[in-house]
Length: 286
Image 1 (cartoon, rainbow, N blue to C red):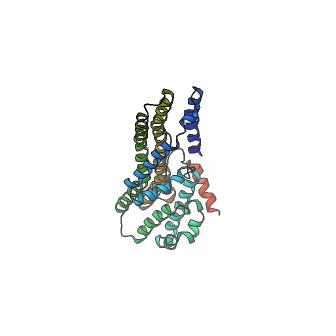
Image 2 (cartoon, rainbow, N blue to C red; image 1 turned 120 degrees about the horizontal axis):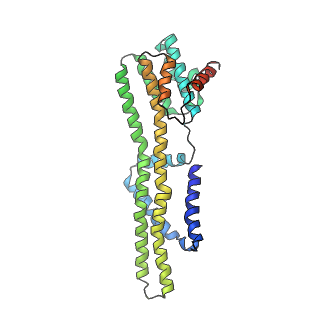
Image 3 (tube, rainbow, N blue to C red; image 1 turned 90 degrees about the vertical axis):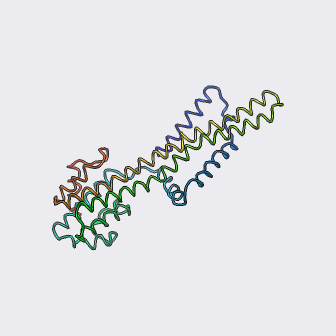
């Protein structure tokens, strides 16, 4: 929603300011130059990225227009789930959660928290490391190193669409100059026409540079920045799980282990100690 509001603001201020200054909006409508800039940029995008990056970018773009799913409610569900799992482990032993982590979708523990269960990445991450804890063959330092490597891989993989969009945006001003130069070439071919018509051709040529810069910094570039921010938000969930499980491995009680996880969250989404405690109590009564 905010992306669309931002786009509307960009268009309203740029074109509205131009019209308010006495400019004629019709002179900015140059579909041929839009095709030149957009087509060249898309072509370069396909040349500069492999199929994996192209598919990842195509899948990421629609998600950028949706609001963030990483809310306080989601984090409270995640930490309540971790508390339930660690409490079961403390009471019944590690082997008691083997069925839960082998089939999370059928697990009574996971089923209580549908918002977490929807995110198969975090469920898989949690299940994998709980499985390693059940095996008992790795210490906390080994598991922490493995978690760090996986989170880093997740982050680098997630950065692919952001990098592709950033490079696409960086190239658009140059393609705008290309369209402008082609317009100037056409103008120079027509030097024999009346000055009024010659001026119109020059104006059309200059629109190419304008469109390239506007598309780059008003539309494509901000999407790359937004994707980076959303990626950082998703990484916080992995860090929360990591810190909580490591605290449990180091012998802390479930309530304290969950508190470790709560502390790594951003302040804007982090529940207070009392809010989390109340949510855990409600989840127990279900």
